[in-house]
Length: 398
Image 1 (cartoon, rainbow, N blue to C red):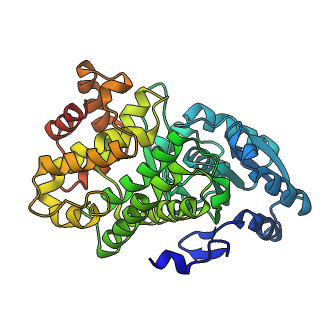
Image 2 (image 1 turned 90 degrees about the vertical axis):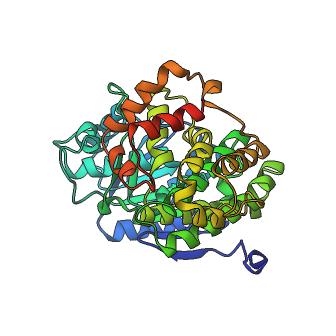
């Protein structure tokens, strides 16, 4: 396979809208990034992180040294949780403004990066709040510079213009997409990802897979997104079992990180639809639910829903995880093939396993149609995404 021709210890510079430093040892590039920030007149910034991973992975040692070497003062907001909230974003934004921060460094998975993107907007719009951002009361045209140091191989947010947050008082989990929140730089260093737990390894990889299934089948899909989708799914199918068998396998982490990064580029182009639109209400209601697990639960039923409309594309891109699949496959068989693969990587979960029941379905359907931004995702689904279709997907996922 072509992967063996790649030196995983050689740091590559990958140009999307974001400059990504990719490869084992890429964290060392934070020194060059800090120099560039300083040359642009940035003397103070806020570091967005969770409580532990940014230090436990060793990333912080490099970041702190680079900031000190370049006389950049910093303040650290380390309270970002999975499914970041409007309350945390507002708290961090106030901290950043009071400190005089001019830029944002996010260290972690999708949550610190998305929260960091949100704070970057609010640094430019000090009279606004997270609710204003995520309920679309205005359209931001600028944000403070963002550097994303990625510690997971899932979200792809380090390469795109998307961010997600939960408005806790309304059970809303909207998504935003603005050109001003593309990170200026990103670092994808697989050696920072070896400490992911088994569950995290599964769930973030499944997130990457879902991104491309949706981006390749939306109404705005292109040959580019289909090609990327097949490549991403091939990498996940090949390397997720290897990472689960040996968490320290750097080659496996490298190609899962590659898959996730390209997945972010893929849905930056092809966007998302059913699975994300229906998952956001799940983790908005149950904040402890892993986003990737919610996506895994919904995926088989979503594939069944759109099979007849997109079976040529789906049969092509899903082949790496479902070798038996073909255009002669029925929709129910396609559902089963996808579910069998999920079981094979240790994710057999259904909604009932996570505490949801039939009595929750109507509320989830309502949230899918009333949460700001989710109607836009449903509008580009390849089938008629009305309430009946959404309810059926939830019911089949119970």
